[in-house]
Image 1 (tube, one colour):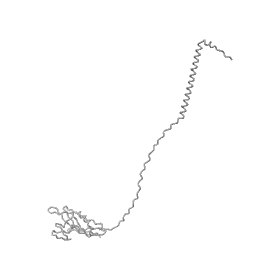
Image 2 (cartoon, helix red, strand yellow):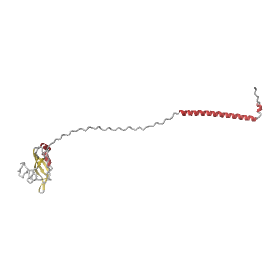
Image 3 (cartoon, helix red, strand yellow):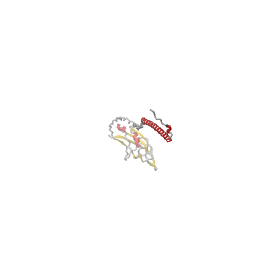
Length: 228
């Protein structure tokens, strides 16, 4: 089969056809270039999208932050109460029933019903009563303005002891008592302290000489007896 021969020389005789052919070739070339470039861009976009999607899938989720729980401090341990100590039982001493008689303390009185304060010297050295040497200017009729009886000692009460004590003392210018001393006691050292404590609290009206109070010495017998 034989192809027909184109007479190129004949076709070139018309210049408008040549120009149209060139324009068509250029347009086809440009179109082909654009198609190729779009396809290339499309492939790149696909590759990029696939990559992005892939990396998004393989991303590990960020775990939420751990909650920090408030830890309460342990309660303070209270000190244990001290152990209760047993109360020791104290044996009470047995009380002894002692029957005591009521004591009587006899303070001798003078004939006028006043307390008898012993016998005193008359200034000449003569003494009556117990016969002891006396001091001048002693009045035998002294009356106490305040007299406190002595206490009966417990030892004498328990033992049923009776006795008598002779005490000598000085009446001062203000009527108080000083320098008291036991002259005689029967039995000894039983009633002495009780008598001295009582005599020290007695009060007297002092004697006056030329308008001035003076001191004087006195003596007293005190008896301790128990009622039967």
